[in-house]
Length: 64
Image (cartoon, rainbow, N blue to C red; front, side, top):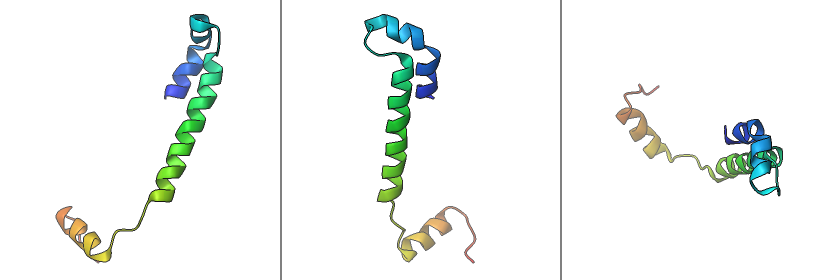
């Protein structure tokens, strides 16, 4: 969403400091978002089976 906002405000962003445009910030923001998603996926770990059973019970899900 932030990347799209930078793209929509391309000229206004460039007019503020005349250093970078909204288009440039769009690419930087999209790359950062992609990095954060990939980082989150790499850091994920499976729940231990006991914790998984407890989570299912507390959420009202039926165990198989």
